[in-house]
Length: 188
Image 1 (tube, rainbow, N blue to C red):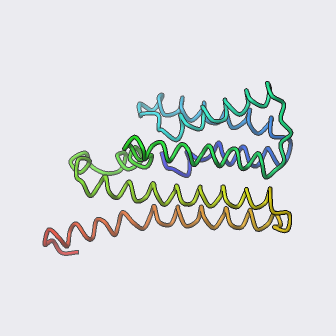
Image 2 (tube, one colour; image 1 turned 60 degrees about the horizontal axis):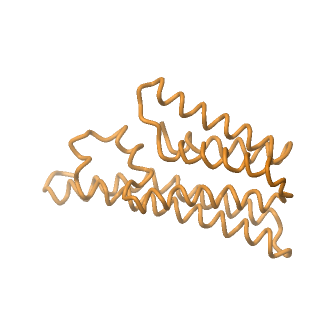
């Protein structure tokens, strides 16, 4: 499964939150997260850190909303979700299991998994995603607390950050591969 597919619950949340309400978005995102976890298990694959994290995040936000009844603005609810997403990635880096590692292991032969360059590449890619999610958090915070910032700036900044992260995730492994081949003296 790809990182982009694992981010589906977040896309479901943002769409339904705008069309209906944060609660509808939380319920749908929680259901999408649960479906992704079940899908991975049924396919015989491990459930990813990002999928478990999104299940916990949306479950927590749904429970919090039901119990505390906060008044969510578009920016504050986006901020809460994006902070949760950033936390998932930062925790994965802190425990030395970059969230991209599980995706990479599905496409890279096992003989390369223990190589320092494999781990370094996954840390680098995970840090780029962390930077993208930090940009989302910053855009959401500006939209909430700086009234002069229009909503389209928040959205445009968020889209740009995600496009950069996706592009880097696709580009960087090729760079690492070419460097490794060049260092080994193999033709690139």
